[in-house]
Length: 212
Image 1 (cartoon, one colour):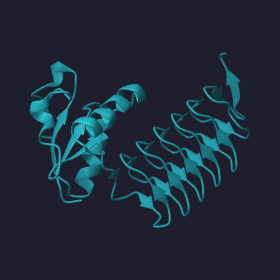
Image 2 (cartoon, rainbow, N blue to C red):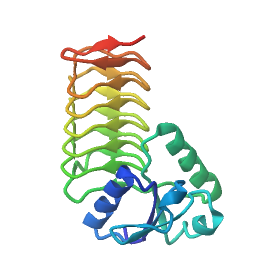
Image 3 (cartoon, helix red, strand yellow):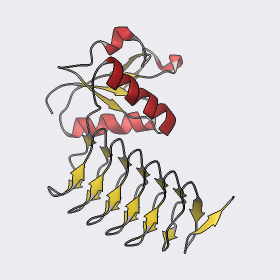
């Protein structure tokens, strides 16, 4: 990717995205964030320009400048992605660290963050706007939906399915063939050996439902 990038979100995920683009020698033009206290401050000499909805800044995004949405909150992220599609006719680019491993036979969407040390193996499918953090593994033929977050060091084994909006905590293991339902949450360090229902929260080894 040769074009510079504007990063939406200047918190920890935005900082991570900045590092990823730097690893690929991609210029980051600036950040946009709705926290006014951050405006006109800098992260590693890159300026937080202003608000994500400000047309004065949005107009630079287009044919010669890309966008990446580095926002952890799913609802907020969806709002920004929708805005970019409607107002700028732009789909966010991928942020894939130079030290990540991505099989040529994997299928990936748009707006994906793949951090250093993460591995996506042969035949895996990664949906749009998913976050895969450092040293996480998505193994052969596993399927990851849209707006999923997979924590650092988590392992999604072969042919497992993580449906859209789900969260898998750091160090968790999802065994082969298991399905994690949409918007479900898997606690850090858990070992999931059976399917998880949509919207459920599970924790432990073996992982069991908690709460409602």
